[in-house]
Image (cartoon, rainbow, N blue to C red):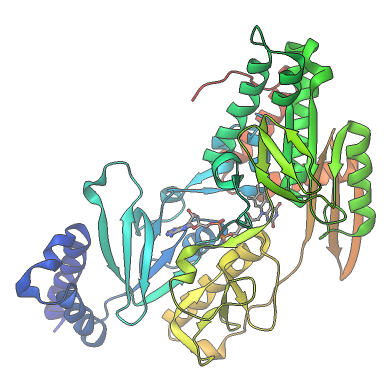
Length: 474
Ligand SMILES: Cc1cc2nc3c(=O)[nH]c(=O)nc-3n(C[C@H](O)[C@H](O)[C@H](O)COP(=O)(O)OP(=O)(O)OC[C@H]3O[C@@H](n4cnc5c(N)ncnc54)[C@H](O)[C@@H]3O)c2cc1C
């Protein structure tokens, strides 16, 4: 019997692996439907033997990474699908746009943080819940590995969200977003480009002012932290290299809302606004962008602003993958889950093999903002719950997800930050240098690996003693 099980286990593993590696195989006429062989293998594998359930995770962001690093791969056959083979520590991403930190100090290679799992550097294009299949497409440049089918027993959707553009013309084409390392790299090069362009012979003063108008659209933490980091970079480092251009530099923060940082306490948002005013960062609240041209921003009211770089950070839009599931979504276009993070179907019934967490999901009747803290806590919760389930503990006998708020922090420039913390059920607000120490300490201690815990303070120290590196290369 044991021999039979072992034989069967290896056979089904072989078939699964073979079809995954050679999708053409599943198209052979003798196989009939695309994945019938695989379906047969699963049917027997899960009922007649102790073969591990296949748990497929979509995404390697905060939610997927946490889940992957805590899930018991001895009990689950884990497959991860994501176009990137690393995790990004997003709270410090804005620092990499200006070289306060280098890119690799805020990334973690996912293969290093878990063992015995399969990873496909691919984008999931379609989820077929009935057949329990995903269609994935390679994210690598070599297209010969193109399309695959991946089967799952359990699916965890944590594909995050995209940046909201509100369909404003020109944003997709001309703005820089700030979600990933590639974006930070593009922004850093553009900043340096703008200064070099302004130094070219035959450039008029008017043109210089245009090239050196740096615009952030979106007065939330991302737009604010980017503006603050940019201000530090320009006035601490670039001013030494381009002193004659300093009078032409403008940093503009635009938001349609009446004030910035609306998710912080009013006193903290006011502190940040005053701090920006003193630093010379122009805040244009109550201002709507109508169009983003190549060199010009059209504002409501007929005003046109010349710009050199526009960073767009106006909130989140749904990932198209979520919309393709045909599952019900909340008004913010997120999948709706129960307290165990199981996705709810049209009849409000929980699908017991499909989970969703992170920016792409919300717990029914308990809406929370889309933050790393929540994605991280949900990832940990789901890993614990699924590990217990694999040990035989009923899902419903386990506690449901409950969020523990730690606090929010944002850097506002010049070694100052704002912090809103929850200490023993009390909200505590701090602003200034102390909050900055807290900000740095919090993100240093939360960074995932010892490698980055060493690298981050070293880069901070190097940047403060020797300045940031201003070389421009691809
Ligand atoms: C610059 C910046 C700063 C931030 N600062 C903070 C902060 O200080 N504190 C805080 O709490 N939050 C912060 N956030 C928000 C936080 O990063 C997000 O809430 C968090 O990343 C959400 O985690 P997630 O796993 O849902 O999605 P993400 O982290 O966005 O990860 C999504 C993953 O899914 C993958 N993916 C996308 N589409 C597909 C697909 N079709 N198929 C397969 N994989 C796919 C992506 O490649 C990625 O790996 C910040 C965000 C940004 C951009």
